[in-house]
Length: 178
Image (cartoon, rainbow, N blue to C red; front, side, top):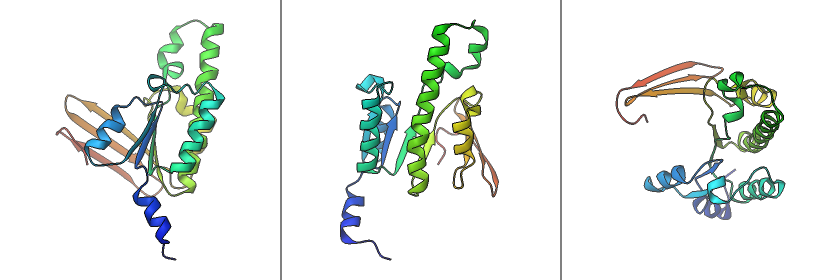
């Protein structure tokens, strides 16, 4: 069925992109390309996802505005391979639990994107232990979710996409891939 006039107006006036755990640099860059940039929800902009009220407010923002793309960049420090070199402590355990809660929160929002036919990007270092969290593994196995690994070095970008139907590798020696 054809979308209604109100659906078209809502889509034309909607937000193209927003960021979770992301300083404003991404939404500023999106504006340079003519995209309608939404919130940059990050500690640097007053958002603290350790607070349930902030998580609820962010979810309401996502539900109300339905940005086409959400970029989630939860802190990776608790999941860094370097953590293996620090001794166990109450502080380290608390930070890990906090990191796991952040991952559960972004996956809850990502699921809305998969169900709604929209796009999410989950940004974490390739070797972070967060990729092994059950909540992340389950999300990676969802139909419609592809895993992309990008590496860059001195202006060269290499991208690998693994999907259920194909494997794509892209390499660029320029400054932009697109």
